Length: 135
Ligand code: CTP
Image (tube, helix red, strand yellow):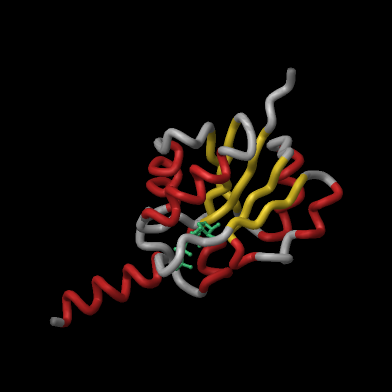
């Protein structure tokens, strides 16, 4: 019987609990989870800032998570369909901050939006650290 492949994407900078939880929940949708890690340049185009951790380090950290079978570098929004086909995605999972944005891929795989873990984000952690340094 063929394996069910789940694909998700993200920057995963300053890897935190919300990241761990989405990977755990995404993996539960199939037999193997493959994660597209936003390149440093793509992240700058998307969020107007460079990640703190380099793409190489972020890829290594995410690939060491036990729910993850493999990672690849995501370089643009335009290549999303190509990535999904290349990695033979049966299910495409994203956090619900992206709800509705990837419905165009429902012709090639199941598209699932998962609720974000409340109140956690890389941005929030950066601000907590900034405040600690200022106090
Ligand atoms: N995510 C989540 N719960 C959180 C934070 C992130 O489920 N509390 C999910 C996102 O929805 C996405 C994946 O983790 O599917 C990677 O998110 P990413 O943008 O890298 O992390 P953020 O913490 O949201 O980063 P930032 O604050 O820079 O936007």
